[in-house]
Length: 65
Image 1 (spheres, rainbow, N blue to C red):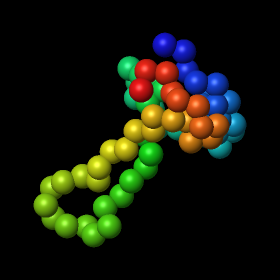
Image 2: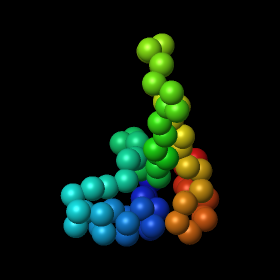
Image 3: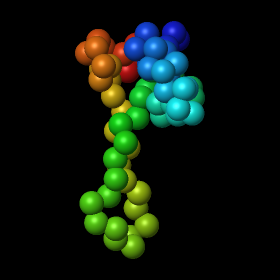
Image 4: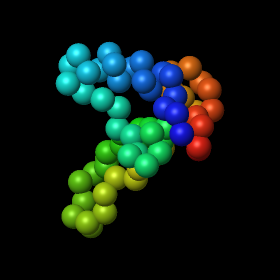
């Protein structure tokens, strides 16, 4: 599966600041949207993961989603 063009372009730019998009290693087009818990409860549960099905930069449907 080929990585979406926007993801490749943005990762090239982010590399200049030693950062990259958080993606699934097995599916490079599964881009995670960062989330956090509103209240820090001691319930042992982590914040819910959100995966984009459309490119947040150009709006195209991501291959394999």
